[in-house]
Length: 228
Image (tube, rainbow, N blue to C red; front, side, top):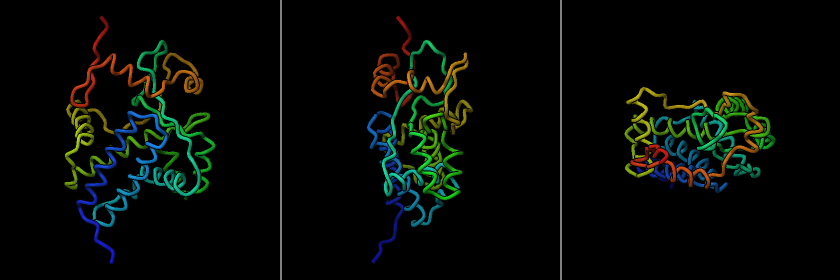
């Protein structure tokens, strides 16, 4: 007999998503993003079965679903986590400091295996470069959507990863900042973005090392220490 999916099942999956999401932000492990994709799919399934609104009208969810299905049922996506430099001689403008790059030919293969709606969602929610597609803006924005959904439907969870995300949302509310991001980065003084991807990005480990050196952290918020 099939057991009814409950609110507690949804809460467990929401906890799992934010745990995997925060782990991905700190880790270069290619498999860490796979856990985020799988949890996203599972969250939607559990919400639907438990009678809560699902994410079928979210471009971010539809894109993640297509990428997840390919990664699970077809082939590797060869994702590579990279970071924009915290210290750079070249000015960089961005609303996210992390990129999750998938080779463009792999993304084209993903689009060939999904529906027209899935392809449109990927093109709308991810950032395309010459040789890569960055899926991190899609993942980030889905995290925002999930947080707001949990808040609205009394599905908030009291775990550190969720509360850290909550502090960012509250900071944005207090300062009238948008929650969602456009993604991508710009070189305002000129320069080739695609070349910068090849030679200017940092490994996640280097980013974490510099962040610890240059910034102090309290309750999930980072403050520049200054230069002595």
